[in-house]
Image 1: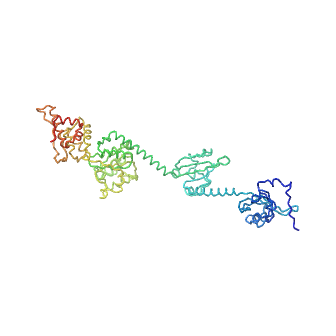
Image 2: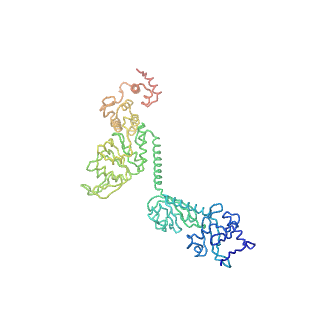
Image 3: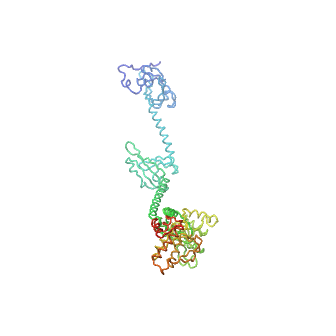
Length: 585
C-alpha cells in the first residue's frame, strides 16, 4: 500500500527559524520536486512566495542523479556512504538568470507514516565563486610572472629551509632544492650568511642589501619580506637580482669620474703656468695640445707612444706622464732600445740567473723587474726586434716571462711608454713590427711638434736654459733674431747645445744653413762693438738702433709685431724710432 505523504502544517507551531532564516531551506521528494521551502529559498530562485514553488522541479533532480558525486545513480547512490552530502552546482532562476549555489542534503527515509524525502539547505555562492575564480586567475598570472622573472625568487622557513623556488632559480642551481638550506643552495655556505637579515625579517621588517656571492663571485641585490600568519612571521619571501653588470658599469663610471677629476686637476695646474708643464717649456698652441694629452695619459693606465723628431723632448713627456700617474711612487725605467746589443737584449729586459752564460756570476734583475708597478720607457721602440716584441707582448698581456737560464715564470705589473721618430704603422706594413704588438702599445699617442713649427716658444726656451746655467746669460737682439731665422734640425736639444757653446765660448754656430740660405756652420759672431774711441752708451745706442731698424725692415715696419718680437710695448718702440730718426725708405 502506498504511503501517504503528510507534512506538518504551517501554523503557529511552524518553526520560526525555518521561516526567518536568510539561508534557503527546503524539502523535496526523491524525484526532486519541492514539497516545502522557506521564503529565502523561494527568493533565491526568483519567486515572491514559497507557495509558487510547491511541486516544481528546481533542478534538485539533477543533483540527486549526478553519478559523479556518488556511488551510483539516484538518491540511494548519492547517499549510500554517509546518508548525507553536498554539491556546488549552477541553477536557473525563474527569469532564466543563472547562479551558483552550494546544496547540503540529508535523506530522510521516512518515519511515522511519512514518505522518504530529502531535506536540504541551499546557499548562493556566485560572488564567492567569482572571487575564487579571480584569485585563481591572479595566482596563475603571478605564478607565470614569477617563473618568467629573470631574477631569483624563493621562500624559506624560520629554519632557513627553502619551500619554493621559481624556474630561474631552479635553472641556476641545476635542481629543485626545496627542503634544503637557502645559505647552502645560494651561496655554498655551511651556516647562515653573515650578511643575512633574517632576524630583522622575523621582526616584521622588509630589508634589502647588496652582496657578492662566494659561490659564483657575482653581485646580487637581495630583498627579503616577512610572510605573516596570525600575526606571526612564518617564513621569508626573498628576491635576488643579478647586478654584476650594473656594478661593473658603476665601477667604470667611478673610475671615469676619478679620471676626469685627476685630468681637471692636472689641467688646472697647467693653466697656472701656460708656458710650462713640468720641465717642458712652450706656450704655443701646439704645446698646449701636448699638455692636454699628457694630462689625459697621466690619468689613465693605458700604454702611450710619444712620437716626434730627435731632440723634441720625448723623454721629458714620458717622465711627465709617469709623474702624473698612480705609478709615480715607483720606478721610471728609461731604456734606449737602439743602444743594446742584439745578443744582450733579452737578458737586459728579462734578467738572468747565475750561471746562465759566461761571466754570469750572480743573478741580475731585468728592466721588467726594476719597472714593477712603475713605468718602462722604451726609447726608439721601433728598433726592437720581432722576437723580443713577441716576448714583450706576452709579458704585457699577463702571460709572464722567464729570466735567461731559468724556467720560473715571473709576472710583473708595469706600464709601457714608448718613444720613436719612426712611422710605426709603416714598420708594421714592412713586416718589421708585429701588428698585435703595435696595437697593444699604441693606445694613446702624443705627437711632439718640431721646434721650427713653434718658433714663438724660442724666447721662453732661451730664458729657461739660460736660467739653468752657472752664470747669468742673455742674448743680444740680433742673435735672438738669427735664432728665429734658423730651422733647427736638432730641435730643442740643438738649441740647448748652441746656448751652452755661446755661453762658454762667446761664439754662435749652427749645424746647418739658416732659412735665408747663409752658411752658419762654424760661423763666429763676435761680441758687438769695439770699445776703442766710443763710450759704452754710444755703442749701446748704435747697437739698439741697428737691431730696431733690422727688425722693422724684416717685418715690413709692422710696429706691433716688432714690439712683441723685441719684448717692449708699442709706445716705447715708437719713442725709440723717433729718437733715432728712423725713416721707412
